[in-house]
Image (cartoon, rainbow, N blue to C red; front, side, top):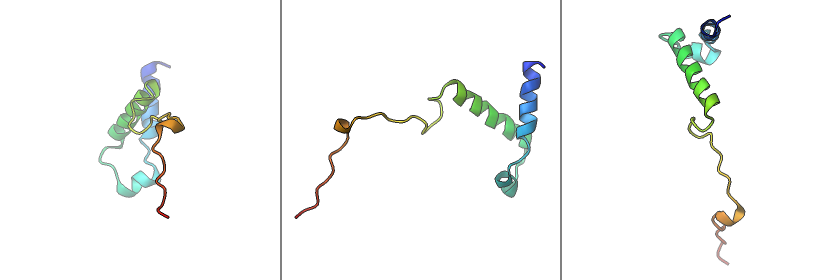
Length: 71
């Protein structure tokens, strides 16, 4: 099996719409599958590539102190 064949099999497998996708439809499930898998491959190669996937690592000293309610 060549790399191209395995990619084609991935696309064909992903082109079957999920129930949520089928509910809204798709003009081109094949192109949609290719785009989804390409983005997935990018995220896998560079885990900082996807928005909102980077966790901040801060210490308690770097956070804002809580506001004390008035007495």
